[in-house]
Image (cartoon, rainbow, N blue to C red; front, side):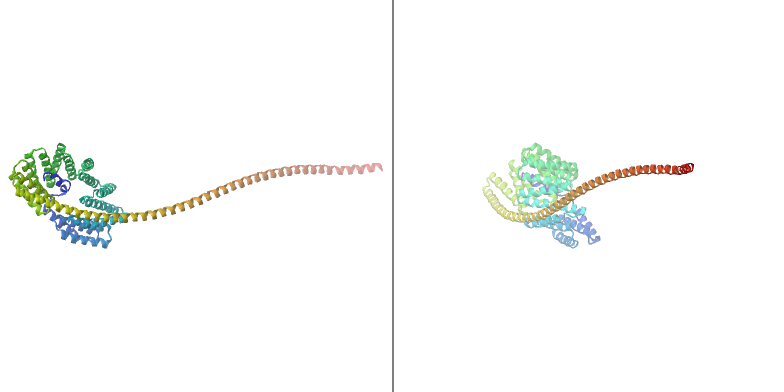
Length: 496
């Protein structure tokens, strides 16, 4: 209706305006590649690429057949990334059809494969699984966001953000910051929402990602619009339109124009509002986006209703009502019923006013029942999530226990080694001291022996001198003995 911006916030900026011919050409190119592929990981990668292309043109049955082929080949090759992608893509199929319970089951299976194999020592394999893990974490968050489980959604968005930061994926970081900002927007925490959107905008500007930059600008404008800061909101919507025009993105142009028209309406610039709504309507019809077409019809009808142009208002409100009823969009159908009831009441057509009032009441009751059904689904998801959390916690506690035991074992070993080393050092010190004392004693003995040897030599030298003196005296004595004999002989003769 007139607050059309909420229907375009986030999501729509990701719609591409590629024509069917281009998509068919992509499909044919991938099929050609697959025919030439061996039964290896390259083939699995191309098969999954084909799945995405087929889903873009709503060939979901064919996409599921190809997904199964890729998954079976991944099992055959025991390729963790391929198995993870298989569960993730099946989860995306369930998510698209609104089966959140099955979607969550497949996403958690994919996440478990990523976590169990992420410790792979091969760098490129590890990075591939980590990237996949971040994607799955983000999609689990999207399920909780769709169910209004904001705390759980925030938890997984933050985990995805941490993973993206870990692998330095700036574009992924920006997307997750934007998602977190959108979550706070839904909670009406506009300060936090703006904080995260501005962080995302800064990164997208630095990386020159124009598509995401323009999306952030729309989101920031929507925050200001929700705060009724119309001047700031219009600035951001106009800036986003300039970027979408430059890159030729039709869906983005429609989003920007519709949001600008909402600001114009709130400023009571009705003609300018209608001009921008009509431009957005033309683009949305070209894209075949029926829910957005219906929403813009409602906004145009509301503008005419405020101007008391009842014929024009009735025309557009009934057209919007017809589309929203056909596609089963109950929220929009309820708003159309309310606007038509107001219209007929203003025209004093009480019969139709009452009829549409009753329709609005019935839809409100139906939506209430749906909310009750969603509440049951929430409980189921919470149970599944808590069960997974409990298993993960038990597994972690088991790992922690093993780690603690190993750590304790290592501590004991370290203590024993330390004791042995201390004993070795003590023994070495003792041996060193003993050797030192022995060496000292040996030196003392050597010194004493040397002194004794010297004394011995001195005594021997003295003995030699004494003996020499004796021998010398003896020789003198011996030399004198013949002379004495001779004299004695002669003296004897003289006495005769």
